[in-house]
Length: 114
Length: 113
Image (tube, each protein chain N blue to C red):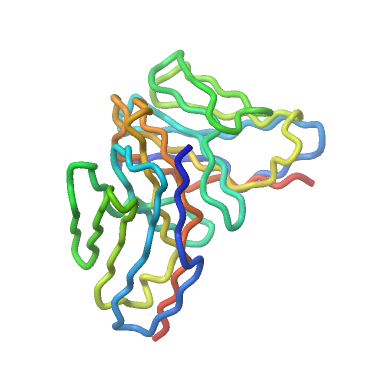
């Protein structure tokens, strides 16, 4: 069974510092990996989706990498801002699940201090 | 605006009651999903549907039921058989074929009194 882990569970950085968020998975037979942002009491906002054939995906200040062989994905947020404070979740879908079931990590709660 | 709506935002249930959570999408997506989120945990899949009039159990389906009579609607009923229903419930949808980007609604917080 796929296990998705996000460490650390919480992270605090000063404004302007680059953020590095980690996501590990145990089964390399993933179809894609998706990163989400969740604000307190809100739903999830999709940030980036990386297909298994891709090594990275970029959107503005966000860059996500994927290394299937080591079972890792990393989300980089450049020049962090207080508005980046949120919980970030990663989720993997498996090649064995044709209908797109996502296996979620527990998330990393990020606080960016002014 | 295209998106997913969930209602109500907050819901309170007494012991022994069934309650229904609404999920509607106007993204023309074939697939829809229900997840449960507990504090400090990742999302867990309750039910999913790939097409109208068809749905499948997820990892934690016991005590829940769903229907998919229309493409845009996927209501979730939390029955009295669900022993610990207090949680945050999230609905999502995606294009057909699986393994496509999932989009989420704003969620419903259910509390048992």
